[in-house]
Image (cartoon, rainbow, N blue to C red; front, side, top):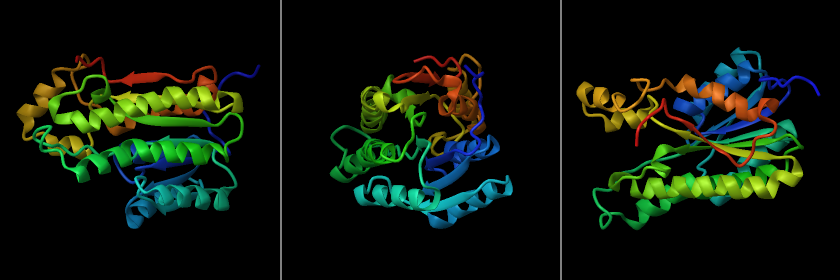
Length: 252
């Protein structure tokens, strides 16, 4: 057998939530590894800005605005990708939201439905649709959170949605394995994203949070790229249905 590679030459990758943070880092990392990239998020101009960065790396790019909590919008994203590139080799279900309710009783129907819609319904729908256009060797990467395994009262709905995403990962890996499609998840710890910045009131809070990580720091978004490339490429060809923790050795 040939040696495994971390390259994605000639592959087509779809990244949701691709306009910033972890999504942007993965979109650019995949492009540097040779992939053509579909950048999707809710705002068209933000998608196009990252698509332009992909093109500057010498790869083709398509910007497709999409609210993944919208059932029909997910279908439109897949249809546009297939119309442009003919197939999907890698799907990264990265789009996510983490609104906070002060208590269980304070959770509104709108907050619940939106959180479940973006973090769980969207990945389910996109995986189902994308798999129809994936050749054998295709991969799905779900971006989960440590909140799914270590929930707190402040993360109740988000944690439940991400725990559902973990279950979805394991179940769909079994269903799609006969098609040669692998499904795995990255369970992320603390990364320096906009949502994390909004949750940290000051530098003291950031230092305290970093102190709970074995490596003693909060990760940069680019530090997800190596793990994502491993899961997207044949370097992980015998790995499916796994939840890969990427948390710097963080404690509970």
